[in-house]
Length: 338
Ligand code: CP
Ligand code: NVA
Image (tube, rainbow, N blue to C red; front, side):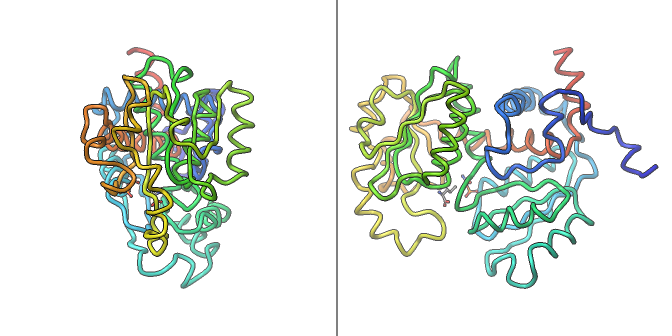
């Protein structure tokens, strides 16, 4: 019997949605079925409420993090989160060269799976993450690519669920660039049966294939996805307004041109005035104050940006527990007794 078998095995076929996710990847929101998203959000609530119950749940687990781009929140919340679960993160600063510059992704993957339990990647090309996942037998987590930022979107909808009773009744307006953030938020809104309106300048809409995928999920869940070029139409009556930088990491040379094109999409007090009175302001951060959002809005009582940032910690602990399996044995019985 291998040493691994002596450690409580993950209940692979228990039928519990959290168990079904064990040993899989989280590269896109589409990797999770709606019931698995629900299980993840419920586990996150439990971890946030009772962090001590999960101390040591990933004892002995090692995770490697390759980041081709800078990070404050994602890096620190994964490192702090894993450490509080008893595991260890090994950070590799990959900002000076692309991951596949020295050797092939398949060779890297086939090394990593011999040493560690999970790989977390922040990359320019989404295909770098899928390339590692294709060849690694261990779970792979997307910590942001040009296509998606699933961990952030999960923290954002967890935040919305903390603020509103019924997510199916919530309308989220995303105003700005049709980028990685807009993609993951759209797919997650679809999965949760929420309503999302995405307003971008012409030519900066979210990718058509992601919109189509979100609409396909929405047809089953009752979610509503609207794409528009009119920011006022998007925010009118909305429960929350979300924005992100106009030039993402890797698009710095376009920043000046984008600043002019995106100017009508700035979230200021005037734009917020079209939303519901109770409307929240959301941003994944880092914010470029004075561009996509004014100080008056991001520093207002309506702003929940630091709640979102805090929830990155809790959601990522839940993601690690679900994918690495170590938390289920604690999560299941204790939640029953709660
Ligand atoms: N929101 C987010 O992912 O922040 P970092 O780029 O600092 O990780
Ligand atoms: N769209 C932004 C998100 C940063 C968290 C970027 O990719 O740079």
